[in-house]
Length: 265
Ligand code: PGA
Image 1 (cartoon, rainbow, N blue to C red):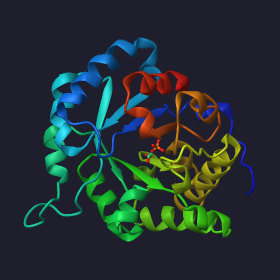
Image 2 (cartoon, rainbow, N blue to C red):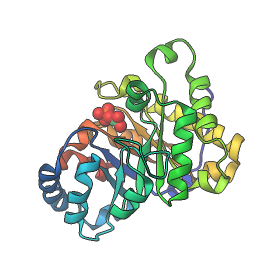
Image 3 (tube, protein in one colour):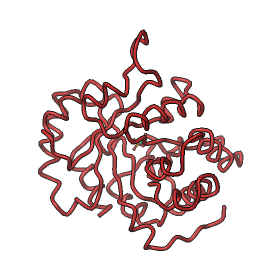
Image 4 (cartoon, protein in one colour):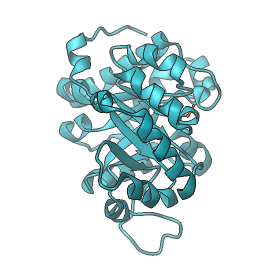
């Protein structure tokens, strides 16, 4: 894969964004304990980094209660419906997320693609719904080990970008967060090397430039996800096309999530 050189200037104009994807962990009571510890860890120097917590739906009100209007930490949801409201058992609407004050929504996570059959086209509808409601999608893409070893990396990433973002304006794409998460690195302890991760991010930015223009490509923030830990965060984050991280396991404890944030400063 060709390496793309980006200037430090461009990298620095994108505010790093570190998000904690709690997945199906941490209920309301535990979230309050997490935030009490997290507040002690995070100080003003971290203002240079956008920090996001993405709890299970049922934990969101507890997180909002502790944050008490503080905008230092953004809150996201792990999914949202592509419908407005009505007879859709188990679904949550953008209106409901807005009522709670959610700024972000994770969409197209590989676990939803894998266990819930979500396709690029279906995720595209959710992305449009979120944007229409003023909620920033954190759009997840990434290849399986089989696809990588079969030489499908670029084809898979390109179709996830082009089909998932189909119909969006360049301005909308510029405001997105895209998380590149190689499926084989999620929850496995195996991280992509910083060079491999950088190559994939540069490729994704190149696809965005070709599809939506250079300005959107320069502005869109790309996170790396997949076994990010305090020990590997700084090296990943120092890559020119990596603007942050989507963190699962290592974001379940306040001290390790805070250490990853500090690595991005
Ligand atoms: P992990 O999860 O950090 O536990 O690998 C990342 C993710 O799935 O977002």
